[in-house]
Length: 77
Image (cartoon, rainbow, N blue to C red; front, side):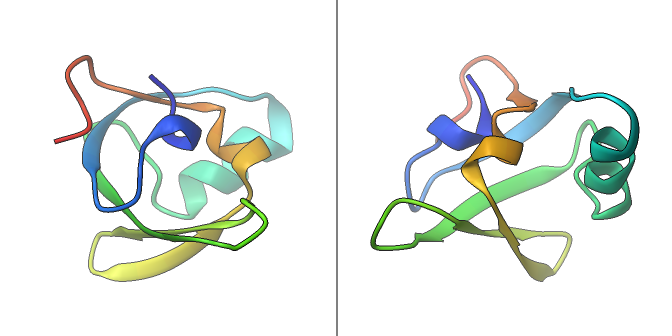
């Protein structure tokens, strides 16, 4: 499951961060690293972007970028 598929109100643990080059480095710099716990707090009315909560702060991320974040199996609880 990817972060883009996680429903509002659910949380999961990041398993892997995909993407290449600058995109991957930007995601890692924002704190989206393996083993980090992340939850979806809101999704914009048109479905993009999504608001996340991780490491004690709020982050807004486009779904296109969230598709590069893989969550642990069984995530979504």
